[in-house]
Image (cartoon, rainbow, N blue to C red; front, top):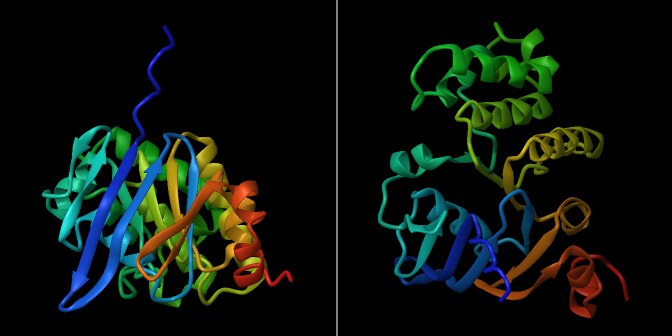
Length: 243
């Protein structure tokens, strides 16, 4: 008798998200394996960010269920979901501009008791992002876009998460900076943190992710390994500029 397949870290099952009369997510199902990088790609308005908001507790569901480590979380508040080990790197970075880099990072650990573990996490963040150590006394608003993105990742890591939801991290950044930011994110994944990557840059997503979901008009229209999805004629034509 074969062993049962391990439970996915995150399961999003047939969810619907609405804003008034507009349906942003329409029956989407996504499964995230522990230790993986899973990407969701699609055009603006596809429902990608709405799905992330639903997982993080920022947007209620109209239907469906979300489970983390096998337990339903869709009725929980944002703070309760964060306490379970889900951290968000939000679209647009949203650092606290008037606070210092160090103050921003400490905000990421607001649910953890102060002490040696938080100090060790801070040191690990500084090792991963040396520029944040160099600029720890500067106001976050004075950082470049790439540095702010690193700060947003570092702030999420301060929560000691099991899962990071990274929303449109390449937005507004020069390609060379995007490469550096994502190189750091890959290092985070190698240390055992699972990542759900929402990205409009399909080429980048296929390079980074193990599994890719394509969302259009609120639905998942294609899913599979990065290589399988990239080989789809529709994806090559619509997202990769081939054919």
